[in-house]
Image 1: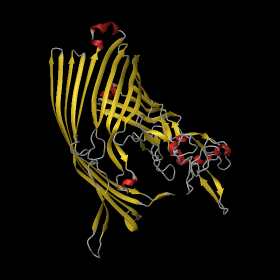
Image 2: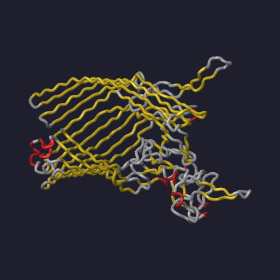
Image 3: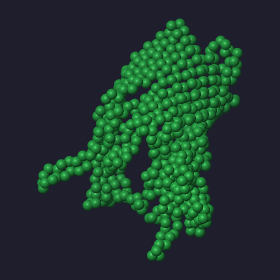
Length: 585
């Protein structure tokens, strides 16, 4: 059972277009979960045949409730008490859910013969009564695996001088996913008005539907096959694990945007429709290669991990094979606002960047005048050269192309472990290669806003002030109208307000994610202090990063359709230092 109570106060702020009055608030939330798990197991050996089996039942019941109260534009006394003013507004919201219920039936069989031939089979039947409606609540997910310890065979003996252990294995199975909001199979309504139609008469409440239900929503299912090897060489000094996998996800759960023509809008209205669509395939290779040994008093272990993955959308059923347009830079204010940055299309990887391809910067006005133009716009020197992809002599939405892949080609890491006379050192590096990022922060920081709020990035723009032509597109130009009024024409070519490849960058990196130095007290000191163990350590996280990405941090996550899009509201990875002491009595 968990309870969470918070008092909140946010002071007023004014950043030009973004501002807010004082806002005190109070939050209270509680949750209770009851877990029941029953397991029956069996184990028996018949000569060299070894058998283990289990069957079980699991049930999870949850109860949740929350209340949130916020008041804006209040007066603040020196005693730090709040009282409402004529401008104050109160908002109270909350929710309650007493119907959380999941149950599972599961079973597993493990069999081996002489420890050399291995077989495992399992099955789960899961039911979620919060996420799926009648007829779709249950999912069946079987799996099986086999293994062969080849190094235990008699014919393998001549090789054991070099290859001390070798195992082959394969598996295939199904997994279920129910990671969506609750009760999407039901209609939900919200009160939008309360009116009386006669003086002093009763008020009539008005309600509006706030979501479109999907009674057919069901489990997402992952079908995965795997073939792998485990090996040790040179009496275990060299160790290797490699896996090839083929994973297909079917009936993908996805939130499709609802078009404005559906009539759903407003702060409390769900503007997305959750449904099962299509299938996607991931194929790849994962490997671990390491070396461990001892040099006098020094024990060391060095290992390398790497993974290749290829992602491909096989189909987008239930939306007529239409592409999914998604992803944004999350801030708006006229800078790429309400523009999708990624597109997911059958036959291609998930969430590739989609927009206008920038071929360079116009060097002269004559060169710009000869190039293709957007309707109603006129490019000049310093503007980006946008590709006329369909060669029709003009620029429009039909000229957008795929311009970057946020799915990395290769993910890798290094691990180092050293132990010497009570001292130990652990280091973890990780990195990615062959990945593109969309720097959605750059068009924001390089843009001129009407309230004068901007950053120093604008000073590198072409023809700004005393600048000539630079490698940064121009921001605009001064123009005089018929009445002699001088005005600044802001970004007439859409250099910063159209989604384009100028902001797509290589996002590969190598990071020192964790470094830890520790010392274990000698046994004689532990005995004197009546301790079982004692270790003091100094640790740092996110200490170093090597990358060509111009943004703050290239380690950008995101969902499957908006991965790799950097946003001003995204908080970077934090560098931390820790000093600790572990004691065991």
